[in-house]
Length: 532
Image: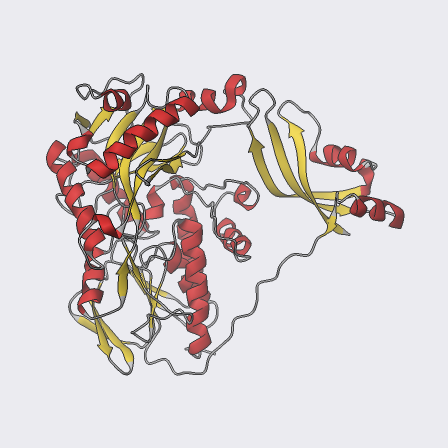
């Protein structure tokens, strides 16, 4: 019979197998454990001299009634029942034309997959290029500084997450998480994402996963068109969505669109706003990328076990609450990664971080950002977007050619002349230009940022003394929300299903994929399949 066993702790130097350790913990013969399956694995490094692995296990146990009663009474085990994915509710309303999914990031991929595998034959339009061409375009940009607004780190197959660490951690407590991770693993993601406490795929393995998902969508009847942008939405005050225009020329009749445009589709936001689709400004965060030697982070987190082969590259999560009322925090931390130019608009610079699966670059980086609210930027739903553009243009002018303005965090905190003096070589390929970052970020960001760095130095020695700040990070999340109702549709445009990070309803690969799945289910609950 299957049982769940939580919080089994095994020391870093232990030589016991999981079966042996579980048997010892339960006080039973190891032979009574028929099989062991990992459900969750985490590292507890709070006591650096006694680092342990913490496991949640699925055990197939052969127990007597007495043994089972004893173990359950002590709350050492509990019966295990795997949650089942509920079947979709299928609507009866007629679709006029094929269902349209806009965008092929995590939300679009999962929405299209769910529709395709339930007989809806979706048409997916992606404004960027296919994966192979996109990777070449991005590499060319990083090498030459020639940005392609169509194909870049933000736009193309896989979405912005394709050039990231591929973190799959989510704070959303939704039973669908397991299904999403299983889908990713089946498509080519590393199998350990199914049990790691902090699962990640890596930019290199993410490309394999995206390719697998695209193949599955096509096999189920979906169609994908690249370099195809929705340039207009045709709406009726009573009927809602009637059609869309693609690339300024082709009109597609449809009364059902799942919009997964991503948080950098600013021209799409502008079109929707001009058509009166209800949206509202929302908070986001702005700051810098801070880069360190990975060895510094490992030593700070793991102490004497920093180089232990079982541990790998350490991460961190830091937050500081400033007296101004603003939060300063790390975001999208990339162990063993690199800092990359992530622009999508000519004349604007934005940076981000990414890591390969092995996290082996020897550098660590993270966004270090300060909360920004609608009170900080111009009024209206598009005010946050204008705010982002302003500072992206400032940093571009400060360095030029997509080089990045930067300074050591020590010089920033000490208010000395900006320098790039750090004990490692930056991973930013376009090159850095020394710059006082206070000149390219607002005071309400740089003040709390300085205070946060002082606090983080006390908690993680070397953090501000040996860090390199690279500007700017502006696209932590969407600056607006396309408001939807409980049925998943736009509040004032029936047939439009705003979805994912670009719609303001997700923050990361897993939560965006979950939102894509749920929006597809909302869509299916209204419409009958294209093909039964």
